[in-house]
Length: 133
Image (cartoon, one colour):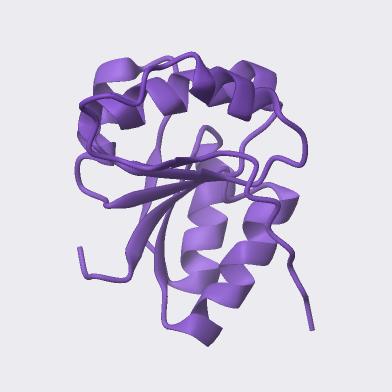
């Protein structure tokens, strides 16, 4: 993976698609990920991007994929059901974590884990502001 690669989990959702459209403006190379293979195939073809079909319950597969990336941008909700699995996997693999949540569910989850001896940054509740042209 190149230095501008990151995993965009939940790429086929509304916000994931907005982020995907903006990445070329910033020379970023998102690799798409999510559960819906047909949606990922369509996005992959439209934006010429690689993709992984991943269910967060597939812990070993998730961790294997995360090890390939310095960062995951987590866009798949509802976060009360998805953030904990992704945060745990990031802590285990040392993958930096950002999410788009506008309220503190994943922030609360992240504070449950001691920040000792981990080699990644957890940045829940990033409140990304997207301007779509």
